[in-house]
View 1 (tube, helix red, strand yellow):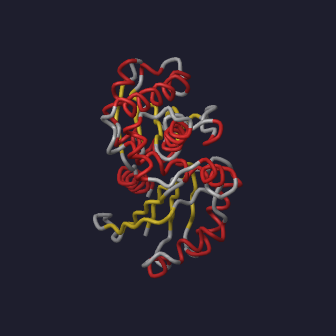
View 2: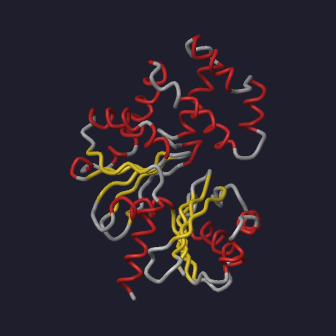
View 3: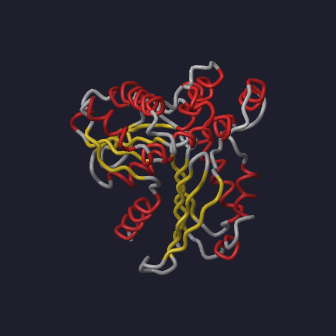
Length: 287
């Protein structure tokens, strides 16, 4: 049996085939497994505490894991070692989430794939492999257009008192927030990126407000200018997007892309279904 996983910083989606024809599938979700934020031991504990995993573990002989933070060999090893503790009979392949997103959106075609979720990233896919770039700098130096990026913008606008008064009233009703609490969570507690990204949920029910619409548009433009336009021939390829931010605010994202002549391709909330199908087709053709 083959198990495929797509892991972001917030959650991990899993699909396993339950028959040789791959027409029956088991799906489950666990917490995020970004090796920059969780240890090998913590990842193993997450899996061991997930209902049904132990019963499934002995039957899995192949795992394809695509995750945020898995861009270097040492980080991939953290994931591989943790998985091998649970799935003792499995061959394990670990790659970055941007590779999985490229497989899910481009298939065997050339194109640009972007992640706009808790964090953000981008790559060019030549139809066979991703071409490493200079992007993916994380929530401190990068992550333009991501949940973390917008959460930070919302917090600072509230604390600097530049958020409109009607939005401030809603914001303070939804969140316990003051300067001391924010500083403590961002600078002293673990997972500051998750904390910042949690505020981006405020944009959903308020996206028609001019302040939020403008914030989203400017954030997407910054992503386009910083990331997409770094590829000189970006106008020649479809540009695909994966992630909750891209999916839920795709109308504003499409408007920004049109302004810069970006050809929008697929927009997926989560890539796991398309990724699973790609892996199944690839493994079948190899065998």
